[in-house]
Each structure stands twice: as structure tokens, then as C-alpha cells.
Image (cartoon, rainbow, N blue to C red):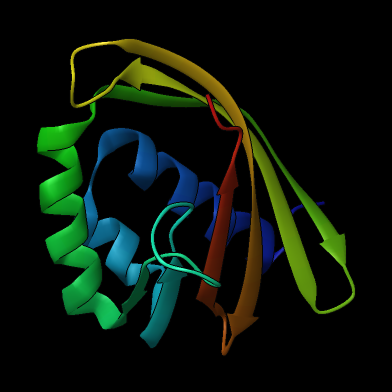
Length: 122
């Protein structure tokens, strides 16, 4: 039987597929942290809060066209959740991509507080 966490991640995933930044923001805490799979060491580029999230999504929609997430699964490990997925699309240089990834999540007060992303490299 689905619970509130399942419902939260279903909403979050659908919002990501639709690039619906306001629905994504509704699923996360005000102090949400997104650790991108690229950027400076050791955590990659880190976005903090909903304003950073909104700005990033606006930039990403121009850089990655037709991004589509599939094969998404959430795995629970105590107070942490792991999401596995496949993403396909067109990158900023116009090349098609197809990769698997994994995200580490933390949930606080019924919303996503952390998304730490890892993606297979070229």
C-alpha cells in the first residue's frame, strides 16, 4: 500500500519529467539542497533553497532538451532513500545521451530536504 513518502516521490518524479519547477519546489523543504553530479569537488555544484532550484531549472531547460526520466525506482535504507533512474535526451551541444544514475535523498517534515545526484559519465 503506498504511503506519504511514495506519494511524495511520485509527485516529484512527474514534476521532473514535465520540467514543472513549481511542482518540484512544492515537494522540497525551504532549505532544500541539491548536489549536482558535476561541478567542484567534493560535492559537485551545490544548490541551496528553492530560489537556486528555480534558477537552475530555468538554465537546464535551455541546456538539455527533451530530457526524459524512466525506469525510476525508490529504495529505502533506514532514514535514507536511493532513487535509481535512466535519463535520455539532447545535451547542450545537440548530442543525444542515454545514461543511468542514482540519487541519494533525505526527507524532513514530509518533504525532500536533500537530493545528491550521481550519473554515469561518458
